[in-house]
Amino acid sequence: MSRDLSVLVRSRWLILVFLAAVFFFYAFSFPPRVEEKVEEDPEITHRVFLDVDMDNQRLGRIVIGLFGKVVPKTTENFRALCTGERGKGARGKSLHYKKTPFHRIIPGFMIQGGDIIYGDGKGGDSIYGGTFADENFKIKQSHAGMVAMVNSGPDSNGSQFFITTVKASWLDGEHVVFGKVIQGMDNVYAIEGGAGTYSGKPRKKVIIADSGEIPKSKWDEES
Image (spheres, rainbow, N blue to C red):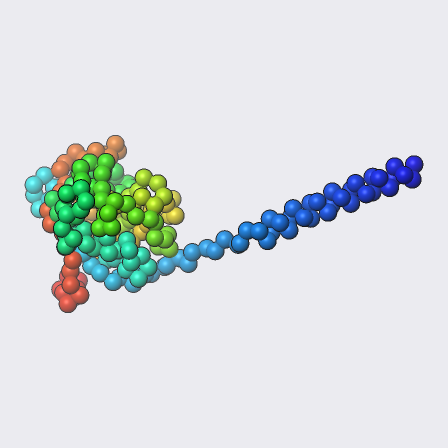
């Protein structure tokens, strides 16, 4: 009887040692996850504009402030695509938003554009050649008017972007936010209401007639 008891105690002791070893292995083998610092009010480093036509009539201008200190690579891509200063990409298409459509417009959500290849959401390019990686997700979808990259999964950013018309916090951590609308949000809502459908296919033709950068020397004139 005493022998059986000894074997039982020894077995339980071995199980405890094994469980303790497993615990310490998992506790020290994987570094703790470092949470990204959330940027509550990032500094605007650049301003760009989109002049928009709807059904061949000038709707107005959308001015976007870019967060170049938090997401410099994503900001530079968007800024250069607004100016068109990089010329043509590897596919022979102009790296410029000018004359490209807002091809997907959903009421109560967002307006999407930036397909400089096909104009229908099936293509895109970047100043870096093809797609580029997600820079970070420090800036959140804190309110309507945030501007973020469209992607087809992790690290697949190109030229497509969207502007939200609601607080889209469910997108946090999925799409890189790099700017916000600082003027012309009424024009964003006009696009949403005038051309949006629940399928996303615009019922009116909405085109970025021109785009570019606003130099800092003229920021006060735009305010």
